[in-house]
Length: 274
Image (cartoon, rainbow, N blue to C red; front, side, top):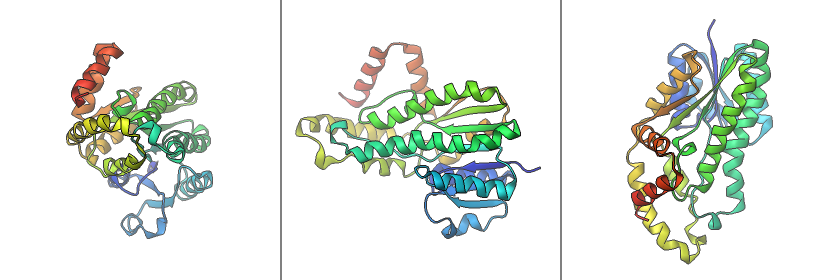
């Protein structure tokens, strides 16, 4: 019997590459997109591919996409919580609506999709919940108060969730990429809200930006993340965390070896010239 994966955030980037990769491996794929699913000609043309509308901030679309998936394929073996956004900037300058958006999408959205899939996996007595986290859930950089906060939350809730789900046969996995060659960085930069930043912060922002852009240049390709996602979803191991990218491996390892917040913070300050 073909296995079925439901993936959020398949409009572009990692989600889209992952949907096509699983399909090529012979899986039934429910590729969910935030906008009108009928307009996605590329994915709709593939047999065994269901394109469904799902906005992680709207529970009715979550329930509808899951219902369509189960009606079409009979079950959901793997859920990949990939949908996410990045809100960056000086906290004092970020509007409340953007603060709420960061956590509504990355944290509450992940929880709500998972909560609605779990009854189906519980009846099956097996399944994999795979959350696409980030090295930003393990290490921090300037201007990332909200994004890091949301990814640290994902790390904590995934780990805690694993206890209860293991008891009913469901595994929880975390994939932690470093910088990835997608349009995520350009979309995240749009939240900097330069017109709202108090003048006192401008020298700090000016020093951070060139260094952050340089760090972003050291990226891996989406297919590399996808291959790790597939491994995590199918290896049947008890491994929870999968790090992707040289930058992620180096920085996460360095922080763990330091075991000293002051030393790590000083290292990052040196990296960005603070």
